[in-house]
Length: 367
Image 1 (cartoon, one colour):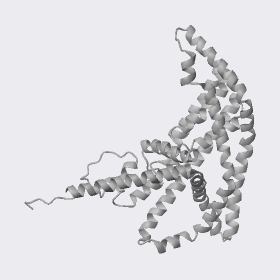
Image 2 (tube, rainbow, N blue to C red; image 1 turned 90 degrees about the vertical axis):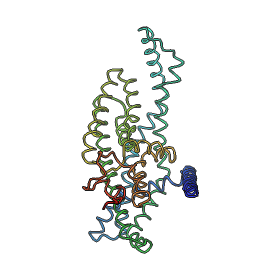
Image 3 (spheres, rainbow, N blue to C red; image 1 turned 120 degrees about the vertical axis):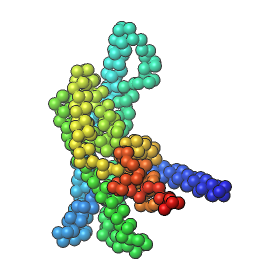
Image 4 (cartoon, rainbow, N blue to C red; image 1 turned 30 degrees about the vertical axis):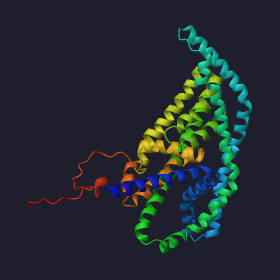
């Protein structure tokens, strides 16, 4: 028994060490991994359009060219819409910061007059809205920095799509049990495509609502904040909050507390409508991850891969969950990563998530 425990302990230690080494390597190779991962997920999203064109006898090269042109035109349109707004916003940033600092000083004076002493030094260290505006400008610039890898990403997508048709045949020769493996592979691809499709549609709807609302309220750069809401809606849990901060601060500078309140109401209505009504209705439980795992994956992949890791945190974690679920020895980890399940007696024979996970039957000596 002692030797068995030592063997198990050594295996756990070796697995943990390997995990740490792999994560450290991924973090160091971030500049290489990020474009490749983006290319892979773009190819997964674009593959149905490619196969659709090929089903109508369109030659593969022409179909790939059409798909790549659609992707490039979409990126170009976003660049045209956002590029000028980002430049103007960055140019006006010192003015906005000065106005915000003045408003903050007036707010602190009002609180002190109401008998709520708030030292300015402590407030500036813990919560400085001017720094928040600066961070927002830096974040917008970092999103634009992804365009520097556009050619590499598109070129990688082209080669992935070229290999897409022959990939199943290659797997069929490599794998020992291709039929069983294809089931998990198809499940992975379907889940990723479904998640990305639903998330893209709901993110577009969020961006359009935010743009229209801020345009009516009168906040500057409504297109910029709508596009920012579209992108950050991919980031689970906190993306919508991050998207709202710079727009609300700008509304406060421009229109005062009343205008900021109206702008905030638009963000609350849009995010509650999309996040709590529309998205769960179509997403259902197909995501297959618990809320805690979604949040932890956001933190982990954001630390490993940066901003892009936050956008891809859910698809990457789903990939790991499906891989764990395909092996009997690691399926228990996949269940832990999965969504909340109703308490159900393990002895029931109706199946469900607990089917196949009952303790083995111990024969009765009297039988």
